[in-house]
Amino acid sequence: MKVAVVGLGHIGLPLAVQYASRGHQVTGCDVSAPIVDAINRGTSPHRDEESVDARIAELVADRRLRATTDDAEGVRDADVVVVIVPVVVDGDRQIDFGPIDAATRDIARGLQPGTLVIYETTLPVGTTRDRFGPMLAAGSGLQLEEGFFLAFSPERVLVGRVLVDLQRYPKIVGGTSEESTRRAVEFYRSALEDATDVWAVSNAETAEMTKLAETTYRDVNIALANEYARYAAKRGIDVLEVIGAANSQPYSHIHQPGVGVGGHCIPVYPHFLFNTEPDLRLPPLARQINEEMASWTVDLVEDRVGSLDDQSVLILGIAYRADVREDAFSSAFRLRDELLAAGARVHAHDPYFSAAHLRDLGFEPYDLEHPKPVKVAILQAGHAAYAELRPTTLPGVELIVDGRNVLDAALFAGSSVAYVGIGH
Image (cartoon, rainbow, N blue to C red; front, side, top):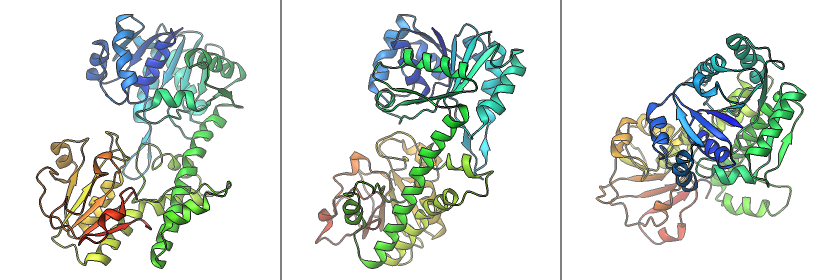
């Protein structure tokens, strides 16, 4: 098949590589000229996944993969169009459809009779059928289910291991009609590895809600773990021991507490459920609990060391999770704001980001090779680079707050540096 992948970000590019590796002729479309130029040179613009990087040069040389900034031109010859353009929320947590609406209008201009369009971007329920279906029809002059076909299939992968996750988890597929579902299932069975299970669900709305359900479940579960951590902290109980013991029972699957929840998914997608549905109660409460963990952590620090006014505090790791070069909706930003409100001077270190990037985000860059005195350090991202953190690593430090409960507390026993985790 000829396949167009619209959106060549950290997930879209690995998808394009996967499809091309299965013998399809793939055109990748992206608004970023540097991304397109890098791919056409046979190089990866992201450097997230070695197995992806290694295949690009071969696929481009074999003319199985190319890239363009013109979405309409890219989809004009396509049998299948896969859309993976981000939908995020703004500062007020309102859904921003701007980029994906623009991409959809461009796709419509190039849409040809018989083409199957599949959205993989996480969407509010009903968006595929009610928003994008009419938009594609109006822009192309084609009628849905006769001139073109439409489906939704949520991406269920993590940046840095996309090709592995594509094989690991079932591919959920739901179309706007039985024929759209059939065509989408047929495509994925040809484009994914033979071992990947492709699941057809009743319709696009079911597939859309599946992704929102699994993501929101994690947010709610983490919020419950954070509530347990705060409860345990008041009573001198180690919540990690509690969770480990509780999860020895097969019906208990308590997640891990932490200083907050970041990333493209968990802080964002619950809003796709509850922003317009006031009857939902648990998801918005879970969001509130998880957003409050930064404030709770700063209160914990002040309880231990007193006022932070004019004191230096170091945030270790601004990435939203360990060992990724991505800071979308990172808890580091809430920590920064809470610390600044407490009067602290906020420093940050992250091996994946430059000093200039940290400075642009409102942090004072910190050099671990030439450390300066700080009063408190808060580990926000559990990068492997911090695994060997010792009491002597940071001059003047009085308190280490392990926001991810990944450090070895025994390393601090008997030293002048206090250690505390989240409920640990």
